[in-house]
Length: 423
Image (cartoon, rainbow, N blue to C red; front, side):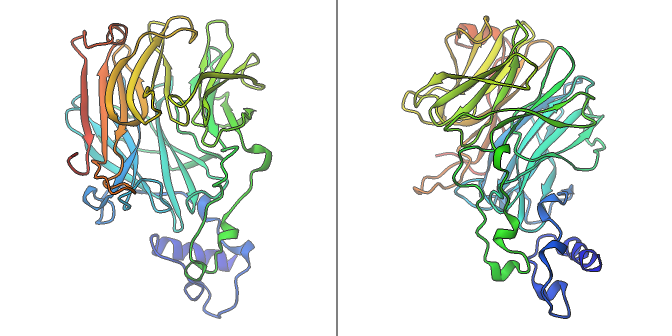
């Protein structure tokens, strides 16, 4: 117990430093692995006063954004960032939260989430629950991926305020949840939590063990076994508690990023990212069991890319996805369906450039706001310069059906954050 308390004190004093055996055991005796705090299970620091390591000018990349809108109109956006110019996937990344009180014209970064040493935060998700509470979810892992990951959250009852009070960070489950929960007609909340079934790059921890002693790469790694798959985590008490409810395991699913919609007949429709396209599964028992139903969209146009799926106030379904015939992450396009996803309208092109990872929020009046990243790097592996942009598109159902801007509210792209000018 004494050793653990000393270790926790060190974590608080040097939260961004590298731990060494001499820092935590003055006698020089090896510390048993069982006595070491599990770093990935320690909450992230909530930082509201940015130092040099978190200001925008220190970032080399940023992307994978999320968006939500309070009933009063305040917008919230989140993404994750890192120092590497090549991309956001890094064992030292952190999550940024920003807000706008003027419908997206101006944005202010309010806080960052910095994980404990040897860990990082990534893949944020923003969601307003039926009671109007704003949930700020994120993933946390040791190394790049430790095989267990973890869904964390904090909430505020004041999403309409520029500086709301937030709850303490809370770990909800293993895995990663990038997409918004779905609330069923019964009132049950379903969270789409991925445990990355076929990802051969999990765990991925490659620290220099001389620098991280007494920790080791093997000691930071985990194997979830049969938990790996496209899981559903449920809450029947409005978020007070969460339990893993069901799972589907579809071969070729490396990064799930799945979404769930309740159809008019009461069945649940799950779409998930797969190396062969967008796979689908159906549940008729509230999410406990799932039947694999092949691929709703197959081929390279649809393979291995995040998409956004949500029901509109009109009852139609909205999907936003990349629509490049060559399979590139470009031609971000919105579609609507009036028959629960069986048929889709012609698309509304939002951005023909390199763009990816759409998320969205729909206001009560039907206005749709979609956030996405555009060239999340500032210099990719091929030496190409990028802008590191987080952008937003505003449109309505009628714009999608017309495949062009026809509503007065339609506007895009709106810049939320950008690291450098695009070529």
